[in-house]
Length: 590
Image (cartoon, rainbow, N blue to C red; front, side):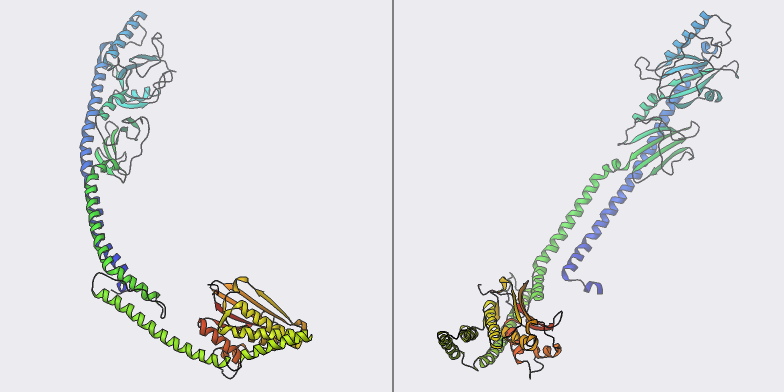
């Protein structure tokens, strides 16, 4: 159970749905698999019986041709065919015409051009029958005489069979014959009176047409039927592949014993009937895909049941999700995102008063009470800090001092003391901006004017030779900053940094924005060694006896904007010190 405890409720519901759906998917897959296997086996058994019957029909057709060839061979006109040259030419011509008519009479479908044709091939080395044609044609019955040089290559092979007929595929009947593939039934014609003497070879052409009719009488769903020899060379087929060599899977090799065998692969069902006596095989090749189309209706019913069950489970899961999990999920999101002191949204309302509704309402009320306590504490601390700041600002009477300085400035100007008047003017700017009409936060532009007035006043007063550079991005000028924040830091850079460096001293004041933060830096190239760890302790209020000015500035910034803002001191690259003021991005114009 430990892995389950690591899952959230959403994941557990999804796991429950998967567990509910998995058995029906497994049953669906197993049912389809078993149905497919059973269907394959039953159909294969049916095709095995059909193959046996089909092979018997083909053998019957071949046996019919064999009986006809026996009749032709025993005919007296053929048996009396004399190749000694003793008879006259007219007698030879008459015998030739008689045999031609005999063969034509046995040729089936000769008048339509799609039947089988009986032809007699006679070896005539002395050219006694020079008047007979020796250009045999596939679709023609007749007698053909060949000399030694014109004898077909298969002639002697057939003679060696000593009168046993068999099927043979030929690309061409002879070198003199027209090109034409054909399946032939060949049988040597022996002299019945002299067993050792061979008269010729009886050839039956277009047997592929005859056997093809028997093959096409069997209907296979998108399947193919082949009659092959033992080397898998196609003798006849339902497609146009006569003469090709087909590949059969393991289990249907030529060395298999006589009889019918079946092999089922992932793509096809093979039914092979071997007959070694005839040297033939009848092969059925049926695509499994076409066969399984008959199973589609059963699969469709099982699929509908699966979909209905899945939809029912989905409805149940959705109901519990909407009524239970969505409110809890929203509550969990609120708890994760809620930060004390931030606004609490309105409590979600549900149409029931169950335990979930009570939990949600109590959580939101608790967050509001926590916010009230935080606000009360913050206001108390703010009032305490403001009281401390007011004591600091009330140590002098700025209004009286500012008005007095204005009077002195005008009197000095009238008396011609321009330099003194300019110093008084800068001092009055300091006092005016320090007042800021009672505002604690002023724009960075006003604070920079205050700091610039202080810098000019100090330069007039002591005739400092160091330079002060200002690099201020315009988009920072309207940002808010506690008043009198820059002047003490610039004063520290002057006194502790570049006071005695004359013209080599430099103070660089920059202001830029980084996303939601405004960065103000005051850099000097002073040479004195600085204890930055001591400064950090002062900023953390761990050493209250020193650094009152920078600690005051840091506390005021954090009081107004939060603890993530304030001052940071660090060494400057190339020597000197850089102090960084981090402020939140704000705009007085808004």
